[in-house]
Image (cartoon, rainbow, N blue to C red; front, side):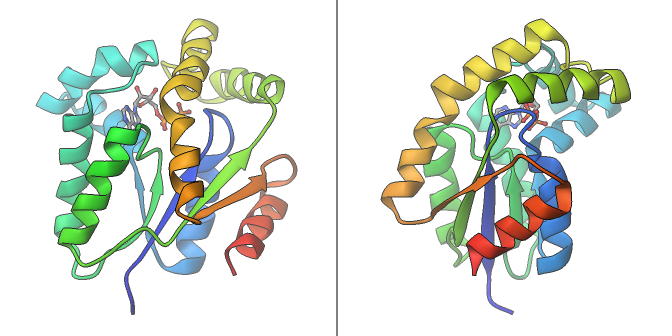
Length: 188
Ligand code: ADP
């Protein structure tokens, strides 16, 4: 199989994690979610988890070098890079670091899916998730900060990938399966 690197990008609450699970299974890719990895480090109390916890709880970005090393650890064990990225890269600097890393492993970005959901719906979804799952960063103040961080740090990535002809914008409102089908439709 050839290498393949897909990226799901979008604000908190857009459904990246859910769609990443569905797409990774269908396309036989390994899902790499930096948010999940960080939460697991925090739960285990690893050195990285201890360093990352205050950023995650505040909804701030964890420093790029920690994130890039964490992803590199995952990718470097792969015989062939076939990954679905969820939540990384999140800054232009991370995107540059990823490009360099992929080149080292004879791979490159295949396509980028932007999941679009209006902000009012995002906040509602995240507050619902707070009630269902109790994630420490799903409270109103932190949610607001994550939205702001998305606007200032992550949005520039949209142009970065659009300029490379890799960006596919997909409407993220609706049933989970319907959104998955839209994404698959956008990728063929
Ligand atoms: P969401 O997209 O709902 O905010 P994530 O699970 O993707 O949730 O991320 C949760 C938190 O983990 C972020 O608010 C941030 O603190 C940290 N994080 C995740 N990915 C990155 C990344 N690529 N760079 C920096 N921090 C990250």
